[in-house]
Image (cartoon, rainbow, N blue to C red; front, side, top):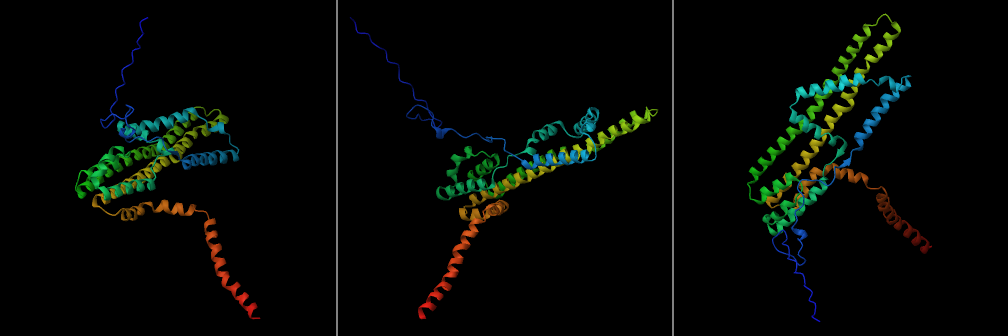
Length: 332
């Protein structure tokens, strides 16, 4: 019998990694994969201050109304809501360019979620770059630029590595900060405009309701109820303005200021790296931006540590007194 020959499959070709060299297993090297740029893994942590504020405001208004003998169903008016909300958004659309309106709506989740990066983590990241730049030169940071997730820090460090003059670097990045602040202020202004229009639209709804009531003055019993229903639109306008729109604008401005302050800290750190400052000096400089976080961390420390430190001190203070008593009894 002829021996059956088994054909062996050809060896798999090694696939080159991101650097262009095949590894031992023919798979791309994990180090060659750049991290995603500018994309955060999560939306951010929930802002319990916003949620709690809405709950407290709604509870206070509804609770006070019910304590006065009112009912929740008395303020449920579809037509009043349509006049106030529809009229408010229509006025905002007339006032605001459409691109800015869409941009402001996209920023609305920032009212409920805090996606800010920890300033302490940013400082530690900058100090890591400063240490490497001091040991191996600032050009050694070029390999890490594509792995930086924050676009502002990535751009600033890239300019520094390319040898851009410090004054030009500051001028370029300050311009970017200024433009970002202008965009953020304009987006918050959209909600401020809505907060200014909604009370007026509430008054318009109330007037329209009173017009309908005046048509039926022959039925005095229904006139009072009609007037009460007419003023529901005014309530809606005031609630939309003072509990939703104006607080949302203020929260967006607060988020914007936090973002600008963090990026100013990034710029200061990158300029310090370009100047070749010692990492310890850079830390001392950047800690000025962390004063609030450092104070908050100091307050969170348990008081038990102070008591533990005070206990040995008392024992040490009481030791000489005890020794004096022993010496006195020995002399006796």
